[in-house]
Image (cartoon, one colour):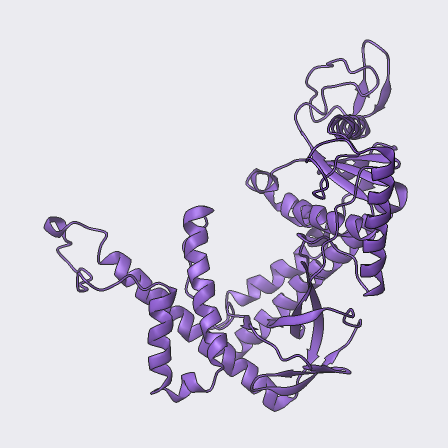
Length: 433
């Protein structure tokens, strides 16, 4: 099953904008009410009976059930019968708000995320239509519940054979956007290791260095506009909360942040395509970028957005039939790529690799990229390039030359089929463009 998300710019009229804003406002109220209900239930049970607070304490019946999604969805159905404000919004949209809140609580426990927060009118920016009609798109218009036919900027055609499963409306500083989730019931094998290998070393001094000797300077997207952002946010401090002047200034700041984000994403896409032009197999380090962002250089790490670049690189590489794999990051700067000897730790001020045994000299980051390439090739060859992962025979058994040729023909036919549909993407990779 292939799942894609195509993003388009909406062009709603005045009445449709009012409906969208009203839907966002009602969704915000439902989120805040449901979150308040959950917090009250938890607060009423967090202290023992013989140690209640002397000032105040939440008192709820002992037999009241925990307000999970199913309980709150039942209450929502009853509330819609008596509330005209809730009736003005599609029922499935409000149910998706409760599902999102329930997922936030699950992620808080399983992924150690923070506690869900209440939302003001600026934080609630999206809502979802979980079901769409079959013929909901005609030319440059899409039919949405309660909105009718809405114009959108059709920057590219929807691939043939894909079904529109759901639509998400997003409000941004530059306008309204729609994200269409598309699905196609087809299975496509992963790209195998082949061709010229390329190692990539990511860093803050240079954004990346390749094993072929290319050094890419890190563009400072946020730093270029930091002075303007600082001045605008200083003016925002003196604006009265809730005033129209504060709202206009907030919109201006949001447009500036979106300009930074769009510029960064466009540059990373171009860089990913450039790397795919140079090699047929790419190896990168397995790095936890979240820990990088918590250090003293966190601001520069977030500005570089390494995690987003890796996700973009994987998507572009699969689309262009380029193999991508991650390798161990440890000691890549302490090993000589030429002879494999250990050269010891290097200070960050040392930008040159000089092996005392074989005399190999090159840029420090280029040497690390070459070590990454060597590790990636060794892992790819060590695990067997011709492993059978499609269920023919025993998993892990090396195929014969005849079976390998048949498998390559099958893989090529599958890729051609999807290419004719207008897209090629991994069955497990989802990326928003």
